[in-house]
Length: 168
Image (cartoon, rainbow, N blue to C red; front, top):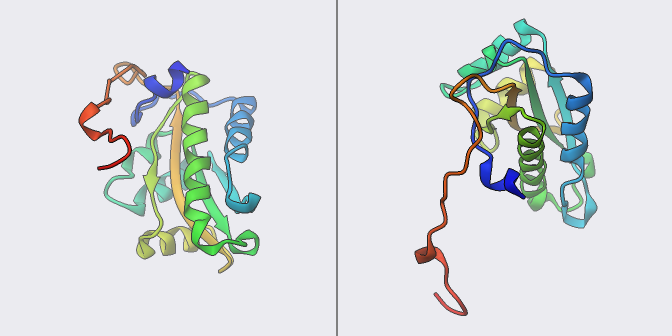
């Protein structure tokens, strides 16, 4: 499971398109995520058009790299599938992590850009994509082939001081 230990947030990408079969693998990985009561509330918007990527880059001060990515995936929660309303963000987080891990496995890089629960960011994405009110924007993940110096490598974050057995 080196992919878990080597995954890093990648913010700079080569000018190289991501192949359709890799995009499908990313989405398949997302849909394999665990989900409360198997509600699977997810929907995905795959963004590859340069103009649309540039618009999406404006969701926050921290999302500028989207404009230079060959691909971004917008993760949405569909209220029609939320049998457990309070758990949709957990389900979506698991799907996002699966995308990032699969990207690493495929030689790609990505970074998780938080959207929910910040209403201004959620509203901006809803407006950009003319989303129905039942769709809740969760996050955006720009993806591409990592630029030089942006490789995945182990950074050991294990801290035994944060581990407690049986009591705090």
